[in-house]
Amino acid sequence: MIIYSSVLITLALLFYSLGVWAERIARYLKPWHTVAFFTGFIFDVSGTYAMHLLADGRFDITEPHTLTGQIALWLMLFHAVWAARVVIKKDERMRTSFHRFSIIVWLIWLIPYFGGMFLGMSK
Image 1 (tube, rainbow, N blue to C red):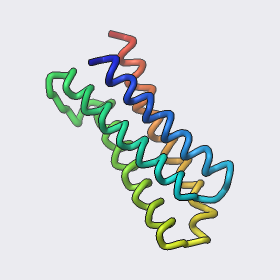
Image 2 (image 1 turned 60 degrees about the horizontal axis):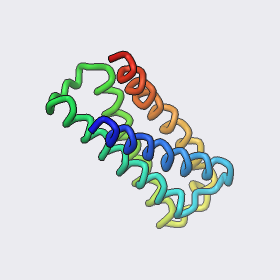
Image 3 (image 1 turned 90 degrees about the horizontal axis):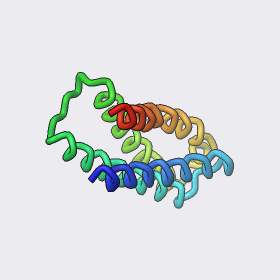
């Protein structure tokens, strides 16, 4: 199960990073970037759930890793939904500046990603 959850979380990193950095380089939010954001989010939720099962179903929001992970998941969801809304509404001004928000969410997401990696290695 640890390999399964690690692969899922790493796929989340891959897809989310692909969407964020491709959008940043293009400086224009494209529909496929939004697909990458949602794909990364789905892999992250799946990996988080698998790790939750490994922890015997314990969920302690006072634990720093759990708290930062929850914040990151909610931000990823908000980011992906907002991106979809911007693309659907064809808001050109937002499509050219959206990358600024994307990089912030990505950097926040890296905190629980690397925190979980270090926690896993320390056990």
